[in-house]
Image (tube, rainbow, N blue to C red):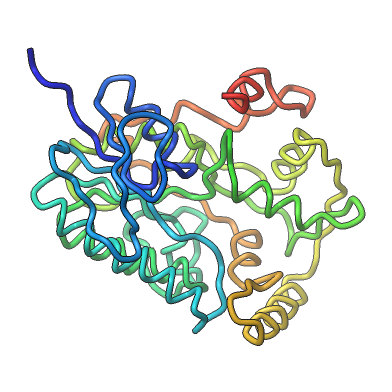
Length: 315
């Protein structure tokens, strides 16, 4: 009998990695590599900030482990992020050897100073506004140089999301959500679409691939519906972009005075909401990948959470 395909998933105790590991378990032997066990398979301990992962026996490595956040420049938190996203990548690629690696990056690597109304993979990777974007760009460069497939999703959402929804809810004040500038179009990525791409990409030529839902979403209506589905009804008001940027700079200055603290508002956060960012996914589609999920799968017709989402959240 042919032995089962063995897939090592780093960061499987996290949001994206957990979904990848669960999807992979349907057809492969899964090894969850990280500080904590994943939702399925065998656990191999690894601290991405300092150790070398044990990838013995793995046929494919999907690297989802990452440090996320928006730390103040020059802080110890930024150094810790680099230790995971850059130095950890170097150790991972060395341990992987000739094994195929799928490295999960982010659309945050793209230069925000250029038009992003339709972003292809040849868009400049430079000028990132925060440590996350800078360290992901540096990490993916190591992965690309070593022959990995690099996936660039944007704003990953879905059941169990520990990042986007909590941050969004924290911005609501007295039933009002202030957003910078007028309404824009934004690409989002359902976590299932990302997981599908992670498991399909082992057979793709090395290089970078954008991963997002089939069509972009209008910012204002999407945020209103997502919050409404989670019991938060809001009025959306538009804040002039200049005012929002000034507030972000002030908040960043305050954060620098408090070691380890994140700014209450950052230029990166303003940028991500103020400008249309639409990913061209043609390169991944040409390899046979199709985004099968949309935001509608998670929202009921009246703005409530769909039965499918409630079921997934209980698992």
